[in-house]
Image 1 (cartoon, one colour):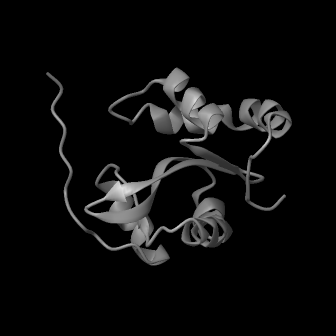
Image 2: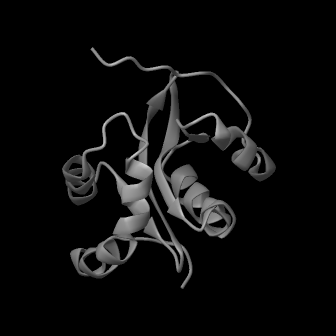
Length: 130
């Protein structure tokens, strides 16, 4: 199976249960680990769900630093699959939808993983919960 965007409810019913574990693992490292919000975003179209044989991603197109970008919100499973073929498929779709690049907010270790895939360190984003 190639990396593809899930666009119908029928696909979602099949694919989400299959990839849920990978996305749940990624969600544990989010500052807002709310699966219900992810599901709502996928169903209302503010997030896109992408799946492959051994990986999954959730993206969101938005403005960041006054530029239209594709946020890689959740990435799980086989990172080589999603960052290899998946990156090409998702970036083609994102460009067609007006995005100028990818943005990923993650742990410091992501810099080491993503640099070989063309990502560059941009900034440090810090969060403190009240």
